[in-house]
Image (cartoon, rainbow, N blue to C red):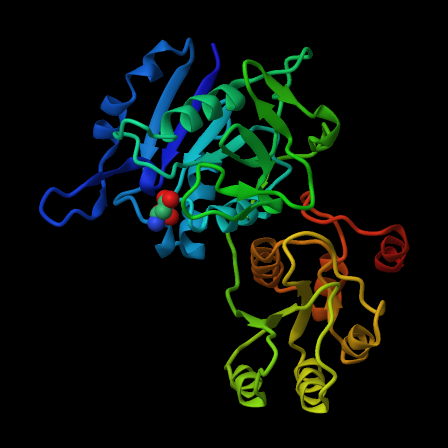
Length: 351
Ligand code: ASP
C-alpha cells in the first residue's frame, strides 16, 4: 500500500471565509480533512502535517523552504511520495527552490493548491489534491516512482516545478510551463510523458540542502528607465546578484550610462544574469548589437529560465558560497532540468 505524506503550508486551498470580515483565512488540518472525506477512499496510507500556523504564500520566504526541505528529509524514507499544499501566488518560486534544494530526489514531490477554497462548491481544490495524491503514489512497470521530481499539478496538468510560472490570477488554468511541455496530462487516465521525466542516477544519494542566500535583486528594463533607478541597485549593501529582465531575445538599450553601471557591478564581483521579459523563448546574447554590449559588460546568459527559477537558483548557488566563476559556469549548466542549453554553450560551460 503506497504511503503519502501531505504537507499543508497554507494558501486558498485551505482557506475559509471569515463571516464577519468576508476575508479568506487559513483553517487547520483537521478542518481540512473534514472537507475532503474522499481521502479515505484511497487505498493508501495518507498522513498529513501542517505548518503552524499555515501561511498565505505571499508571505513566503527562504526560511519556509528550509522548513519544507526539513519536513521532506525527515520523512523521506517513510513515504513513497509527498504532496505539498501551497498558495498559488508564490508556488512557482517554491517549486523552483525545492528542485535545487532536494538534490538527487528519487520520490515525487507534487505541489498543488487551488483558486477556490476547498470548502466551496465549485472548488478546483479537490481535483487538484486527489490527482496530486494519485501522481505522488504512481509507480512504473518496474516499481519505480513515475515522477521522481518536484512538480506543480494544476488544472489537469503536471508541470516541472522549475519551469513553471503563474499566469492567471482568476482562471483554474493558473500555471504554464512555456519552455517545456507538460510532464503529464490528466483526463480519464493520466498520461505521463516518460521521455521528459528526469531520474537521478541509481547510485546517487538523496541530499537535502538548507542554505539559501537572498542577496539578489530583480531589475526590469522599460523604455524611459532612469539611471537613478540603477544607481539605487549599486548602493544595495551586500548585493551579490542582479537578474536583469531584458527585452525579446535579451536586448537592452545602448545608453552608455547603463553599461558603465553594469561594468561597475561586474568589477565589484556582482553576478548579472540576463533573462527575457517574454514568457516564452530564450536569451541569445550577441544575436543583436544591443545584447552584444551586455556580454562585454560581463552579463551572463540566463537562457530559457523562468524568473522564479533564476531567483532561486542564484539563492541556492550563493548559499553554497561558490565563487563568481563557478556560479557563472553553473548558471549555464542544467542541474535540475531547469534550463535548455544550446550545444555550443554547453561546450563553453564544460571547458
Ligand atoms: N494568496 C493566496 C496564496 O498564495 C492565493 C492562492 O492560494 O491562490 O496563498
